[in-house]
Picture 1: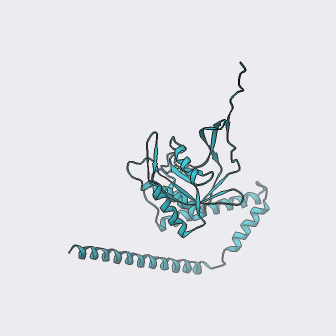
Picture 2 (picture 1 turned 135 degrees about the horizontal axis):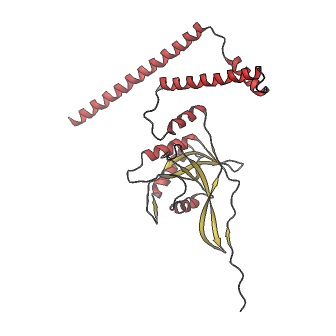
Picture 3 (picture 1 turned 135 degrees about the vertical axis):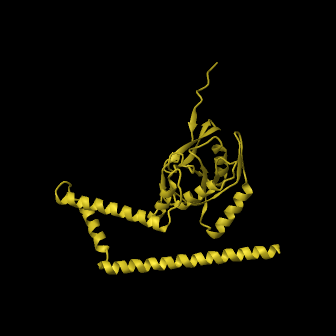
Length: 285
């Protein structure tokens, strides 16, 4: 009796060139969803919105949470809520489409394959983004995955998640806010004065580093770098040539304007709160 040929297990072709670019709004939204999750929920899942750039990079720009119930062997998604939220977002920005889904926690879990299968019916090759919103390792570990199918002949057996490169796009102000979220415990968000104090301390530390570098170059301890020298020269030239008295006056005037705005906003909040209480009391009576 002739023996049949060996059965080969094979993975489907992997989109090795896929990479993702994540905007900070997505990370902040996911952290906010995690804080507001139901008490019994261990993690939060939701939809990622964005677009695919011409070079194949998945640009993730927005997100929304999707209610779900999860057990050891099944996951139930509120599909109607998901579709209604998608329609609402696309009314505001029609160019944003589904590019994947997210979940909080550290890495991929057992139910991820079931959820990924649902999103694979919504969009081709969805990206799975995981965010450690609990900051278990002292920082928000952010990872991206795509699914690769393991098949036996024409029969699909399982799916494997493969990590892809992520580019977290943040400007300086967004990076400062993200750094505030990194510690495991934060007593409070710094106010404007505390934030200014921290910024000034960092600025002074950077100036000290520049002084040390320039002194080392002048004394011959460090080889000169023309690019760094040009950057320092441009930075110094951009500083306005003002006397200390004039600079102090500008700073004080700006500070007084900011304090006035804070005072006016505080009065507005007080009036709105008072009007709300009066309206509530009138309805009760």
